[in-house]
Length: 306
Image (tube, rainbow, N blue to C red; front, top):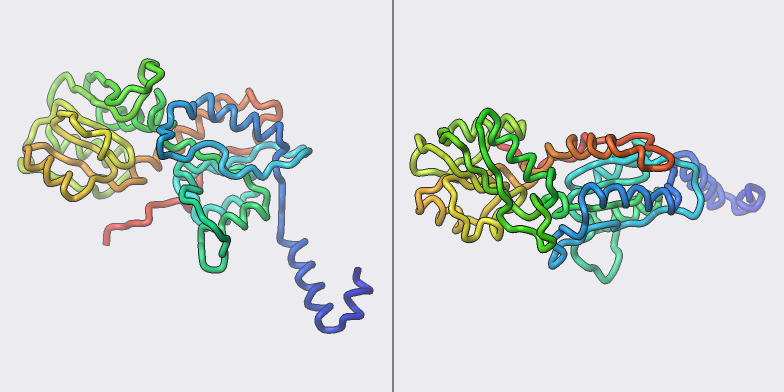
């Protein structure tokens, strides 16, 4: 090959440089197909995809970059949003599976234009480095012990309470479904609710919608991400979610209800460390075990308060 390229002169030298760059900087450690199947089976056991809202969601194995044979151990990177930065982090950390809470592939496309489309550029890069992608999304929302139950723990800390599912799953399994309605045994002030939420989500600021800053709260409707459809028809003193439309916000405040709006992914990101710990507890179910289970350091909300 080198002799052939040298005959091409300057063009051959450019090709040699490209090949050298490719072999030097491209590091691949894909999982075997049986190993990836074990990883996805474990994730599905913890957060069953049958609980996801499959009428619109796109969950499960979105990119299968496994190979027929490999001795590599699973090395997972957990993130909320699979951005270009997260993809590069996975490459740098030599991960072979990204668990992206939000579906990386959501809308269909008819052509691949990586030069102008960041999502497609990321897709190509992940395939080049043989990194698989799995998205559990609303399966984590609905699961018992999932993200919504984690939000319940944070907002109710220090109080005796009960919690019930707002929209029960068709399976009728106890504790499974969308949203949670918390009833506190003793009312607390809305400012105390806000304080608990800020601590549990590790946020400096949230949005509070209320007509009465001294309101006492006994019931709290909770939904990670967007609570729009989940809160419909639910009566509570306070509604705690990531986002609502402007008119929905106005309607609740007009009814003398309080709103705590935290930003869509801010209500989800803190759960990644819980998910990582849960996977680690069950990693013995993988024949090869796991090399590492990492939580992304580059994954973050696209918004900041300025």
